[in-house]
Image 1 (cartoon, rainbow, N blue to C red):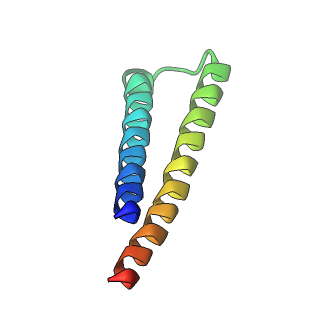
Image 2: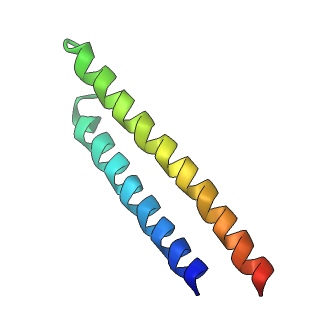
Length: 74
């Protein structure tokens, strides 16, 4: 039972991080075709998106481990 709760928590974390990435991408979508006058802003944006994506991947790896454990326990 505890494993299922942990897995659900990880899925919730993944969903929230995906939402954050989507929001970040949507924030620059209207200006992607404009010249980059302020490249520091875009570098910071890319760094934040990269950090979030790395978090998604690591949390997904943990969720897969949790799922393997749940399946093997049944």
